[in-house]
Each structure stands twice: as structure tokens, then as C-alpha cells.
Length: 369
Image (cartoon, rainbow, N blue to C red; front, side):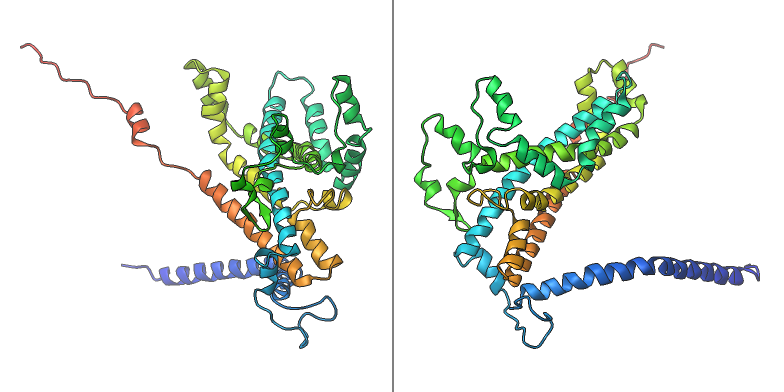
């Protein structure tokens, strides 16, 4: 039999939860308003600009602005004109940038984290600060420094000269590094299958040319400046891993590489996903280094979609195309993030591995009476 106080208690609990919900909405309301005013509304206006003929003057919501549908998207993806070729060039440059920067900075940051996490290393605080320092330095300052270091008569070429290597004129060399490598073996022109077809106005041979010498200098700069930040993320993940499992593996005879590959790295999967996601987003959005440095030169081999969006909107007054490039770039980032999440997902243990850890039943033996 229910007690008479049961119903009032349930009513009081509902009232308490309702009060907590109201308090939660009250405290989050300022953030919601700020995000709505300064983020959601501008994004919605950018969506309208990407499908309209707004020319940058007056309000994009005025009656003189017309709806043009996907014309701005078609101009940069399928029309075959200069806008399409520039977008293809920017996408190719940025794709090579992502392919090289993300693995290199991830591997280097993980190596640095393992290094400074070792208890036997003296002065760990100094090394952590030294490795992290480039990440807190202004990207503009780092870019200006890089322009001096990788000048034709800069420090990098001077060091290469000590080993008898004639360094290139880094930021003025548009040649692809893979094509330069093939030229060492006498390959000057690609096969017809690669030179006759292409995508977004760029032949397959140019898509496979690799990053230009100028873009390779930016790749080195990105690895140098971002590895310190991701090192801290890996370091936090390493310090959250208990030492008992590693000690058990040592007792079982596992060497250092086996312990790292089979024990440490699987436990760093959430951190690895975060690092790869942030790396992908940052690499596809590279802008300030290009703006400060070469602004797409030489021969547009350092052009990126983010800089092309700025150039189309603010310099060429093609605001619809600039907004369209930004949203295509957003779609590219989302697709790569979903693919990466699928690759790093938790997979069920296979039956073969489960069988290896199962205890096999021993055969029954007859007992004598």
C-alpha cells in the first residue's frame, strides 16, 4: 500500500528537476545568444550570399539582390574557366599539404610526448617548454622568420652548402618535388593517360606532381609550429595510462616496441582521434601563412581554398564565389572527419583472437576404482 507522502515526493522531484532545467537554460542563455548573433546568423547570411548575385555593396538582403541558385558553385566546379582551374589548383595544393603535414606532425608530436614523458629524462620541464614555444608564437612572426631562413641566400641553403648541396630558391620555385625527383631519372613528361585527362581543369599529371618547392617550405613550417601543441595532448593521454598494464607486459617478456604498439598506442586512440581531427581542420583552413608569405605565388602553387575564398570575395568582388568556396571547403572537412572517425572506430574483437585467449577444456581421464 502506497504511503500518503509518495505523490507529494514525486511532485517535489519533478519540480526540482524543472527548476534545474530552468536554471541551466538561464546560465546558458548568454552563450546561446552570443553564438546565435555572431555565428549562426552570419553563417546563414553566407549561405544566402553563396546562392545570390550580391556584389558587396549594400545589404545582401535588399530587394536588388537576386537568387542565382547554384551558379556560383558551378562557376568554380564545372564551368571550366579560370575560376574552376584556380579552385582545382588550390584544392590540389591543399590536398598535398594535408597528406604530408597531418602524418608528420602527428608522428613527431607523439614522439616528443613519449620522449618528455620518460622519468629518466632530466630537465623535462625545459624540454616541454622549448617544444611548445613555437606553438604560442605568432604565425605571422614565424612566417616572416621562415621567409628569411628559406631565402635563396638564407641560413637553410647555407647549411645545405656545407654538404655540397645547392639549395633551391624556396619560395620562388613552383616545380613539384615528385616531378623533380622523376627528372633525375630522365622523366620529363608524364604518360598520355595522365596528361590528357584531369579534374577541375588540372591534369592528373599535375595532380600527382606533389607539392611545389615553395609549398614544401610551408609544410616544414606547419610541422615545426604545431607539433608542440599536439605533444601536450599526447602527453596528457600518456599520463592517464596506468603503469600496471605496462609492467605486466614487461613481466611477460614484451620489449619496448611491443609495449608501445600493443598497449600504449591503443589506449591513446581517443587522443589520436582528437589530434588527427584538429590537424585536418587546421590544415584545410591554412590562410594566414599564405597571406603573410607568398599570397599564392609562385605560379599559384601555394594557393589554398581558404586564401582563394578571400581573394575571390575581397579582391575580385566575387562574393558569391568566395562564399561558395568556403562552403565547399566546409564539406570537404566534414567528409574527411567522418572518414577518419570510421577508420579509428572501435572494432569488435575477431573470433580468431577470442579463440586464442579462450581456455581450452582438458580431456576427461578415466579414474580407477
